[in-house]
Image (cartoon, rainbow, N blue to C red; front, top):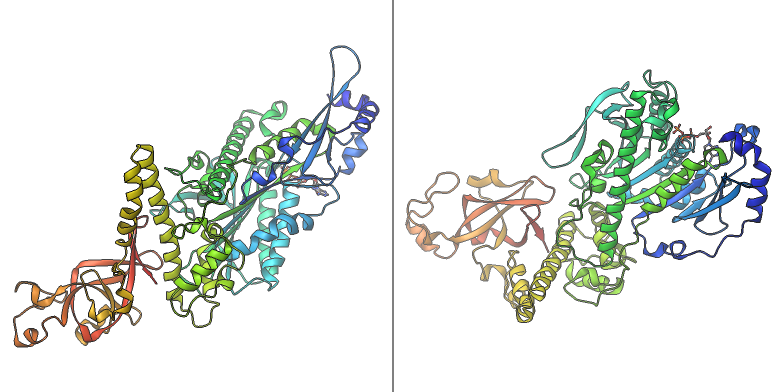
Length: 615
Ligand SMILES: Nc1ncnc2c1ncn2[C@@H]1O[C@H](COP(=O)(O)OP(=O)(O)OP(=O)(O)O)[C@@H](O)[C@H]1O
């Protein structure tokens, strides 16, 4: 084949020069319909000196200022002269041979770094055939990331940790610990852990780049993978950002992934049985990756289109070790917001045109055309329908005291966009308001999310009744579900509650902050104690004892005196998840009204099965 190409180079060049691109069809202009959380771009590297020296022409051409790439193959007909076969591929951004890695970084990667820094998950994949520039691009992007992270331009302080692992077949190795084999495990919370992989804290650019270089060196010189080792394994560089000001908040994650070469399985002539098996595994993992990226993009596109699906989308992330490792990027039940960039690297040399064509096809397939985002009609109970102005006004009047400054929390976001903001970033923005406390920020974030979840539940109920043809129930459902939703919170559901001091409307289920007396001192956590009112002590029988074993209602004169002023309460204590509480129904304490400091609003969260404070 190569001989045929070399013999017809001049003809090929003439045909390419005469090529007239057709007007872009639908696929060339549909970028607005693609998911806003994933950017797919193509990077066509320059021709290398040896490729030029061998006499091969270029076969891949970015089309001017568009997002389209033209690819020209030379076909050998049964009879007659060779002909040109042209195809074009459209992605979100195209980088040509003259674009540097810094250009790629500025355009598509730099915007997602603050996302990870703020507590979100950002992932960059470099995909492509062998020698297309994946490692070159990944290494360059890593340098740019190191500069951004250590340049001081990002908001606040973070502790930065790095780990680098290599996935070869079904085995994972730690590239920062002498290539020790490690396990990819799912813990009891469903989080994927790189069990045994070392994580190194990095405090400056040099140490970060030092670790990256050490990992790259180990990948290059792996004894069992001497030749084109990097093309046969995936390398995952994971940066984790811990926010010391928000210890319980979710950590930000930035993944930079140099994928294995995509063409490995086809090159049968140079591969023995082991290599062929390896190649098959690579192809499977890249194919699963494609399905996962598409699945996630589609789920995101549906979210932005305001569609409420009955069940989470099916994303086959468990089908390969690569996507299992990246579970929280792809798991449809994960509540974490992710942004993804795919750089499809292309070797433009005509000798490698078949593999380039596959790379471009793969990239194009990652661009999901989801449902068209349409702004739903404004509903004051559905945050997903709020534009920026409506969101800001809601924040101002629903965020407690002092009100959170809407310009600091949501300067330009719509309700949907704020729902997608990583939680730590939401909290950080709240705390920029003077006088706002971490408890208030947490409670407000929970309130906003609870409202979104309730609005979805309400829509499902109404849709289900509509589908069953019960219009009356659908209409009534609105009220019933609103009332039920309000009863998932400890807030007094009566409309005038706000104007009555809390001590004058104590009721079962009310949660209070209370001043512990010495006998209950150990129940205060971080200086604060919370309890849920159950009933007045005079209402309980003589056998009832409190958490300390002391009789609650001894019918003494003292207790009789305080009839109605002393309550049997259940302890409310912090639970496993950040910001969550549990109610210990059977650990009861006696609380005097005079010791109750303030009413605290708690909400039940079905998903985590814990209670959270609200405002
Ligand atoms: N944008 C570019 N500009 C200049 N040279 C490049 C560019 N991209 C890649 N190269 C060069 O091309 C060669 C192959 O690149 P690289 O090793 O990054 O490919 P790869 O896709 O990672 O290959 P493999 O899968 O075998 O690891 C290298 O010599 C690299 O320096």
